[in-house]
Image 1 (cartoon, rainbow, N blue to C red):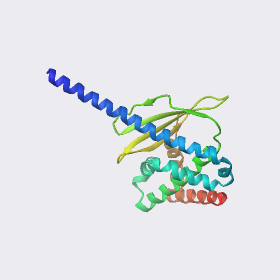
Image 2 (spheres, rainbow, N blue to C red):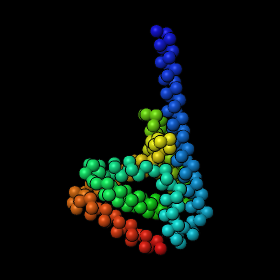
Image 3 (cartoon, rainbow, N blue to C red):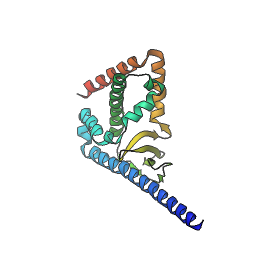
Image 4 (spheres, rainbow, N blue to C red):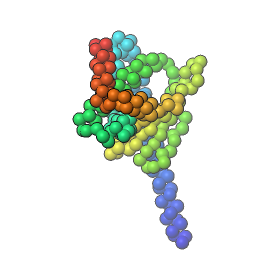
Length: 205
C-alpha cells in the first residue's frame, strides 16, 4: 500500500511538472512572437502605415504560423462545417485567414507605446492545452486583458482562440457567420468574404 501511494504521488508530481512545462512553453510562444512583431512595428511603423500590404505580410509571416486555422475554421462554422464539402471548407479557411490578417494588421498599426505584461500562466486542464494571459497597459485607460488559448499540435503550440476583454474571437465570428449562413447559405458567405478581402487587397496596393 505504501509503495502504491509513493508511486501514485510520484506519478502525480510528474504530471504536474508536465503541465507546468506545457504552460511555460506556451507562454514563451506568445511572448516571443509578440516581442518580435512589436519590435518590427515600432521600427517600421511609418513604412507600414504607408504600405498596408507590408503590414499584412508581417502578420502572415510572424503571427499566423502559430495559429491553427483548421481547428478555428471548424469551430467558427460549427454544424455547417460537417455539411460542407472539402472544396468549400478549403475556400472558407482561406478567406477566413485573410479576414484575420486584415483585422490583426489594422489593430497593430494602432499600437503605440503600451506596455505588455504576463501576470500569470493559467495551467492547462490537460497536458496538451494551455491558456496564456496577456495584459496591455494603456495610459489613462483600463488594462486590456487578452487571453490566448493554445493546444499542442504535433509538438508545436498553436493558438486556436483569442479573447480580448473577455470576448472570444471564435464565438464572435461563429455567431456572425451562423446568421449569414442561415440567411444566404455558406457559398454566399464565402463569396462575400472573398469580395471584401479583394477590396481591401486592392486598397492596400
